[in-house]
Image (cartoon, rainbow, N blue to C red):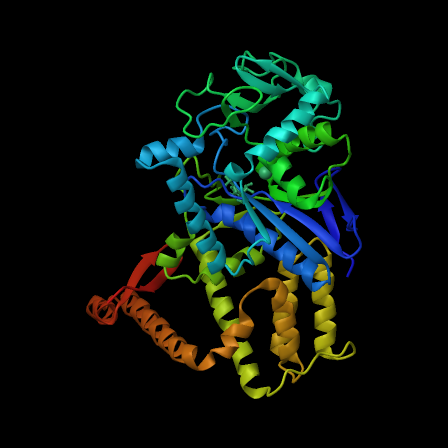
Length: 474
Ligand code: AMP
Ligand code: ZN
């Protein structure tokens, strides 16, 4: 399979070619573990998962590295504000390490529930301080730094291609352009490689370094850890679009300044945002939805995964209950159809290229090769499932190796889940009956239905997208 991927560096679609035949080094920026991930963050990780699964299915051996930021990320990406970890620890009356451990566990619990394959290497910033210091020393030796006001800065004026990824104009980088610029900086976009206690007295975690006792700037961890595990040049690096102007721009500057090798990363892939009521969902600004929130509303985590696959990763996606309900219904119907197929297809018969199933598989592959077009791939899966021929099932499972909707396991525990499914259908039937009763102003019947369900441990919640249900603990 030959993938065409949209490279943010140069803003063009390019045929993917790894540095080493058959192997892909992939680094995806991981979470800052000071709070639960919101469903927008999780969009980024479902995207990474689709990329990794697609490459593996195409035969590449992928080494997927993800960092966990447990130190150094300020509330502003541009060195301003407070340390997110310290702030969260203070607010919750816990130590920074306790906060990090709690939210790291919660993060992987969420990604597991979304059927995201765990990265091969998960690396914590606090466990790689020595590597960060060694990298900063190289940058310093190559003369890209200056020490000012207690911090070691990267001097962007020494790096002529600064801002290439974000297409920033050099004339906008001059000192004084940005109001409120740090007076210690020579250029407003210079960034801190190493903070000393002189800037933040309350920093909980500090380490000795050649520049004094302190802690690293946020960006250096990704350069240091990706180089440790993937080498000095990387095939693919990914993150959300918010990372383009500062975080990834700075990662490139410091990495290339340290090694002198350009380009540090061959393919930069960025996912667009999930938006809620036209606003960007943000962890630091609060007011966000977690995966558990939507599970509590009666959705399965895989309903959310299905919802995400319905949008291309480079398009903004509007979150809505209507959209989630649509995804829930579609996924349920897909599972039912695949189960029906599994019940009548005794063995898995592979789809030969000339067959109808083979044609759907080919179209599916084309969609995924075309910059990971999951909406088109889903449409091919549906087309295939509707045909329902003997060789369909194997092709469905093959497609699901990329989509990760758990279709094969839904078939292998059919007996156990058949009862759940029957129950779910009964509940949906009663919800429809209640809606009709309300429409006919028969409120007694409507209340009765709600009450009967409640006694069976089923809670109904009426929302803008209709009524959803969830099981409550007995
Ligand atoms: P953070 O934990 O804040 O560093 O963010 C984790 C990942 O989520 C990063 O790749 C961000 O770019 C990405 N991200 C943050 N907000 C959103 C959003 N609303 N939609 C999609 N991705 C997001
Ligand atoms: Zn990063």
